[in-house]
Length: 221
Image 1 (cartoon, rainbow, N blue to C red):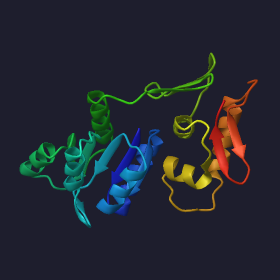
Image 2: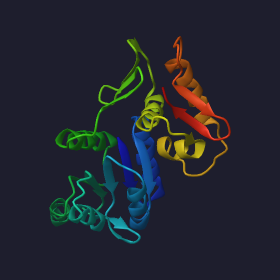
Image 3: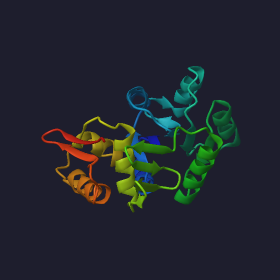
Image 4: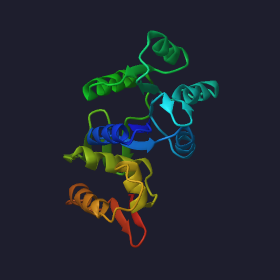
């Protein structure tokens, strides 16, 4: 899933981001309502995870805006506001669930899974030429050949398969797949693209993973 985490406490934001990425999700982090609005306007997401106490307002304000605009993006409040009236207000204002801090990460994952089951999903299967990706089973096939992938490899390949034929820069891949929004001088993207190329294009007559020198990478038939 593509998730937007709106949390102004860096330690909590980092904890959530790392854990969700390890589970194979794509995570974008915003620290304010303004940054969250910008992120929602520029990219599609499958789930909003949002704190209520943010520097520029209550996270519920953003959820109300989405609902008033007819946007059904699933939203999970993760907040220290634990009174019964706070939880009731959150649900009445459009949140799909309400999780009180502190919480166990396993409970967060269970609540995300419950929200996913209740909501109609976008296509959980992507196909590019003879490559088939199943997001629910977390499997990849090239023709009839099973391709074993780590969660991070699957997240990278899924992102590429969502935009076949489009070139993605290293910075874009770092931001969307690793949630790194600056240039740390790492070659992790190149390393993982090498992993995918060896796994996906091994023994294939026509490669799917392509490099555009000096620009980035893409997936195309």
